[in-house]
Length: 126
View 1 (cartoon, rainbow, N blue to C red):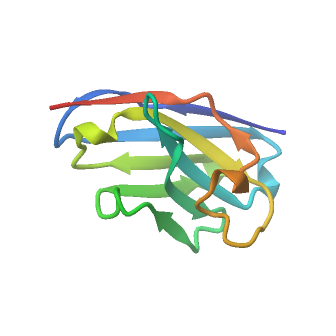
View 2: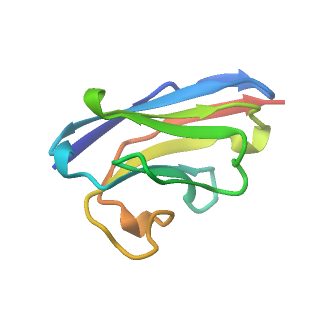
């Protein structure tokens, strides 16, 4: 089992920045990939960014590429999402997730992840 707790959400003006953190505990040594997803009211959950546990592979949704950066600190069992140049359309609940095994072409899909946090709200005002 892996437990995930997000933090760092809040209210920010458009153009501002936030850094989300996801602290992992439990059976983290066998993790394979980590990711952030988001879900706005009335919309499907969507992929934001992912990183392999080894750090040698990062993936971003086109909508956040160049503005968001995913990183991880394995020594702290924590991974991050630095969000710059925030836009009102980035307003969502952000969830972190961990996938435990290799799977084909699943780094950017929710099906590739086994454990999820409860989410943290990010609100960007215009």
